[in-house]
Amino acid sequence: MSDAADLVSVYQANNPTEAYFVKNLLEARGIEAAVSEANEPLAGLPIAAVDVLVKQGDLAAAEAVRDEFNRDVANRHSIPNWKCAQCGEMVPATFDECYACGADRPA
Ligand SMILES: [Zn+2]
Image (cartoon, rainbow, N blue to C red; front, side, top):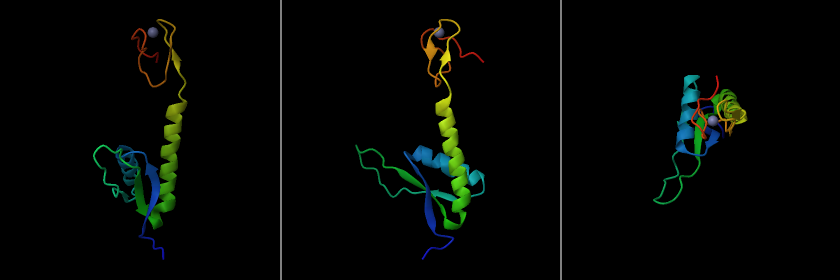
């Protein structure tokens, strides 16, 4: 039996930091969310994926927020590399200054 108050997974995060980020995003939109921490990390083992849980009744709204989050992540990865005005080096988009000469990314 499924009930509107049952918890369902809306997002499987790669790590707890990401899970809590999505949880906060959901709660900022008024959607009650929880992070599953059923996977007790053992010493020396990587932390397993973590689910972000919402109520069944909130799932559709939560999925919209999750899709928005996924688009944001995709957008961040699609920012093009930039060319340093000072030394001409192509610098990865994730850098805010040139790794070769230290010049700031052009505005
Ligand atoms: Zn440079």
